[in-house]
Image 1 (cartoon, rainbow, N blue to C red):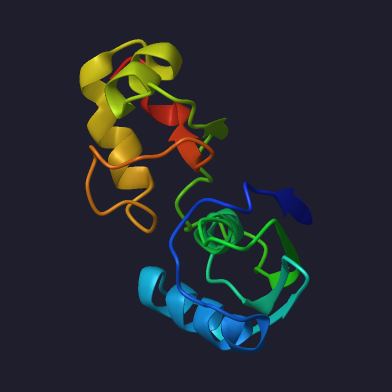
Image 2 (cartoon, rainbow, N blue to C red; image 1 turned 180 degrees about the vertical axis):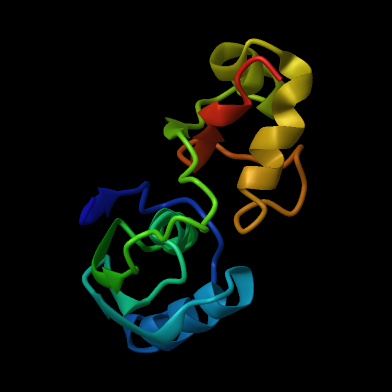
Length: 153
């Protein structure tokens, strides 16, 4: 996965200068996610480089989305974010895809498109709880995780 692109001019405003960006991004990730050990964030010219240890492999994606949902972050590099190999007793990795919100999108419309049922928007909302506080507050350019395992539910 490595380097992910995001819309630089949209997202949560959590820093005003590049000098404060790394500390604020790190704090934001710590608040919005759990289970990331030895988290370290560097920020340079719109690129957030994240290092640390995730509890599960799919946590890497979530950390990248949380960092990319910050205004001023154009790219997120998670090459230094490690995760252990899954164990047989671990829950299976969810099947996912990503959707970049366009003007006029709603979670219901996105759910209808990917999951076949508009009322499945709650599954998308829950999968993106680290990004979303309200299912009615999404914005163009925001990148969302779509849990395809929910298809047909």
